[in-house]
Length: 355
Image 1 (cartoon, rainbow, N blue to C red):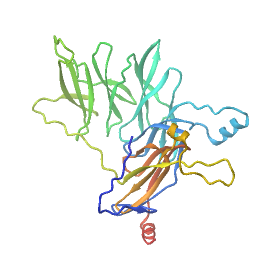
Image 2: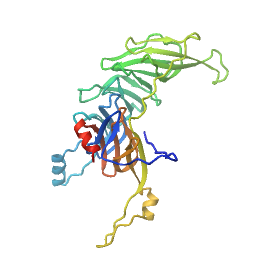
Image 3: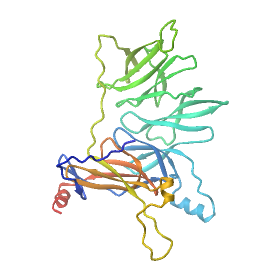
Image 4: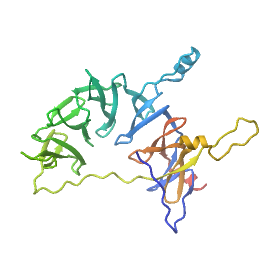
């Protein structure tokens, strides 16, 4: 999760609250918050910042259905689901719903946009393991790809930044490293990686190749720490791997771009209202609130060099900013929301600057 604290440097003037922010000559104003669900955890953004995914509760009950349930005295029982939010259209789609014996372990976006690869934890014939599901954009429900793997250790997954596919690495029951490529078409083995026991991805290099570090125990090793390793680069488009030699340069990994605006999250305290009429609310938390940790809510602002814009109030501590730096997903006591900064026209920017 992303959270940031503003560090004040002596001699600098603190940014003042404003209706807008400026970056590279473009002015941005915050749009109203958008409700997604009652609860959202495991928040992640697609690389193009268009799609948001989260494990959510309560998104599936629209206003008419809620009215009908309340009218008929039915409970609003929420099932946990993985949802994908298209922030361009505002549509929220349930791509996977948990059920007995099947829970979402993790999810990640595959490729440049909104395709989702989901890892579940499942119990099959009394054995715990995992399975993969793929949910490309334009398809409402995720479908299973590959077989159930009876292992409590989930796979390592690396998504391509350009191709709509991901690389999955895991050790089978015989401690043999298996590396495959997963896409909407299914699973295919990665050629050129054999004879290893385990592996872990290091990241993406500057040629958009995956970097995989592998290991195995030396033949006849007396201790488990007597191991040897290697490193492979994986071509996502071709589905092939090449082992690096001592003559190859160490891969330079791609680093994320710096945020467009700084984020400042700071603690606030809930107010306590008395049941007695005419009594003003107290700004001091009660002992009960302190004991439960419920007095800790936070405010979130975005800042440029001279301005500060309020993005959210009363949030839970963690939030996620999109890669383009213009959107944020956060949770409050009232629900799970997104909010974005919208670029304005030059005429509007001039009016904002003129007060």
